[in-house]
Picture 1 (cartoon, rainbow, N blue to C red):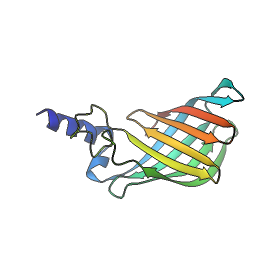
Picture 2: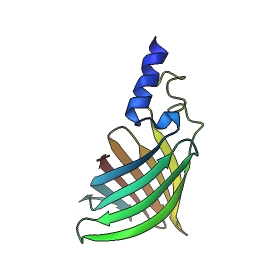
Picture 3: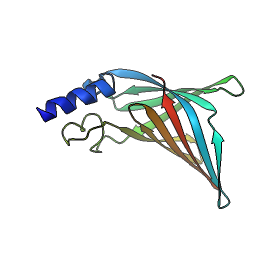
Length: 143
């Protein structure tokens, strides 16, 4: 019974993605922290990101970045490597009795930048490492 309930939670949280469906995820950044030169600064969010997630093919691609301060749309094609072996991954969460399914992935938005992405039921978190700085952001999921 417990495994059935968890499977339904995973199915509901990710809109059927655990069964192999695709999803468009839109997140609106709410806050961001920059760590550089031994200092941490907090800023308001600036971007709205759109991702295409296909768990049946294990693909995650950021397709669009909207800068809501400058009102500019930036096309993007950053592909992420989804970490499917994790116990919290949507296809494993019920089997390992995880209450919340989470998609975690790594991407490389530019030649000297690495990004770790965490997609939860209601938030998307990102940690970006560039030479000399670390940027951590939190976004609210709109879709």
